[in-house]
Length: 156
Image (cartoon, rainbow, N blue to C red; front, side):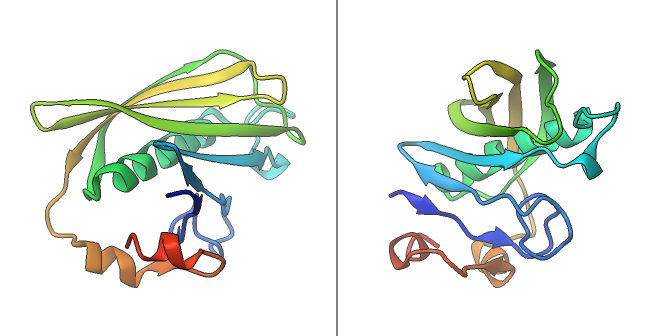
């Protein structure tokens, strides 16, 4: 199933009304991806997006692809990020996450941010474990389904 995913209302990265990034995540062909323009309010060095925000975007697409592919509610246990090129404020980028494998209760996911020319700017490997205390029903109550197709909505 492909299409726009809901945003988690309270999330800085995918929440549509938190004052954060409001990433519009898409799901297709076993991947979750989004395009974003690096905003100056998230810069570290002058004109360059802060590395913590870059890592957060990668974590977001990795968490969502794991959720969409497994329907498991997980939390990040470890993330490794390789910063290869600066993400320049005002330019547009594409972030993508894909599930790699699972081993001993840990799910390993890859993340990538590319520039408009397809150059890798940041790569990540995320390690996720199932969480306790949250259900899909809990998550669903906090999702904003505006703009989400009925076909994608049915997956939740």
